[in-house]
Image (cartoon, rainbow, N blue to C red; front, top):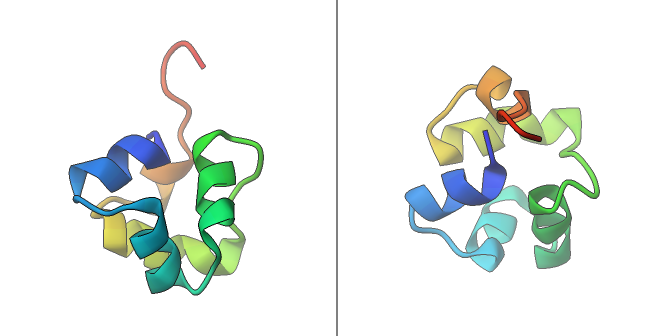
Length: 64
């Protein structure tokens, strides 16, 4: 699952998601461009906020 698509689906900005997770906006941007991955301790909250499973967050989409 693409974090950006999931974030947009629930109607959050990068800044709003960052605030909910206690990270800076640039961290969310790096996740979305796949320059870095969320830390393991952030995954449960990220999945809950985005309405998906951790497995779905980490699964690569076709063509990636």
